[in-house]
Length: 505
Picture: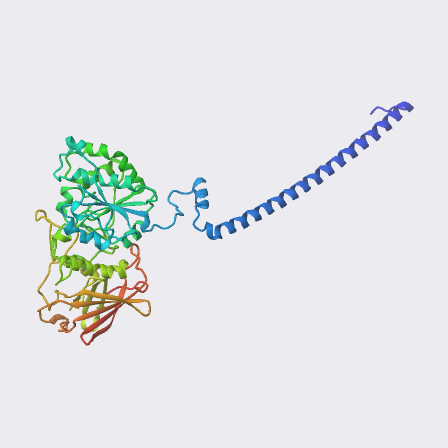
């Protein structure tokens, strides 16, 4: 290393050392001030964020609990805007006001079929229209107790495309477009039916509430008879049974119906035209077993005494079958069935099975309609198959039905004692008691193989059921106990929830 002994050089060296130390001190001071500023800024920012978050949380709590905002869609809309899953919905539950009914009818048959509309229509509550081929002059002034009527539009422009065997096919299929035109605000579902369809609208609301009304749904059921489904389509909802269209699907059909009518000029009837239009839109039938076309003749008691485990939604063709109840006409029978429906529509025709083991008796209860008592023990898998008391719409194909049946028998161990619904009322303890009476004797001896325990002396059965609604799909049947075998010729049965893993029988 070089060393210099000149005085001026030593003075310069001392000067630069002092300058360097001052500069270093200045940089240290600047670093400390920067650190202080940073810490101060971060602290203030964190404090501000905490206060802002608290204010927003309080605002959310106050807004979501304020009475005026209880039914608000504010947060729903925010959720939808920021990418919620399309199957998630925070809409209010579907209720009767969300449904609009389109009813295809005729002036020529209105006198005899209006009893069926009168059974289920609720004036000033249900929404919908009755579509007629002409003004019902003979029935004016039109009663307010019936759906308001509309005269169907002129369809002469479709004449080149009208090669259908059903003469009114085009007019009837256009009911969906004309219903949509009349009512398209605040609608979730369009329900289409005929003037001889009996609907059970509380159950219908409950079933439709399970589906997302913002999607494309075509909900109904095909016919009970194989022949009818072959003649039309196994993928078709039969209009007499009624079917439901979600709002987006009804809107799409209304816009494209003219094209569909011209595309399918030779199909038999309106239901098949509509199903073909729905298929063109890429939508398939969603089946609900509670819709009943009733392409049957004769005695329906066997079918109605073993209804599938699904809410009872409709009946059709009651003017070509026997009355539902013995010793009554058709009108009286419908009124009787609706009496049970008014008290508990959710249990109507739902089958409950229980046993009285000391006498080897099997009880099959179709709530609000009938009770069958067998003098032998039969498992549910047998009793849930309807007795074939009816005949098919057409005697052409075998097998005739879309479900399994049992043939009626004169064997005293196989033939049931039958009791029909008479009345129902609410009683203390949040219960409903329904009464069923024997209308005719069985005229057979006791079942000897089960101990000769005759049921002939019983003339009436009372059933005690909860007042709460029965919820269907995904749940088990209710269980029941025979709480009194025969006191003054009356038996009593009490419904209850089945125990965990309980096997009936």
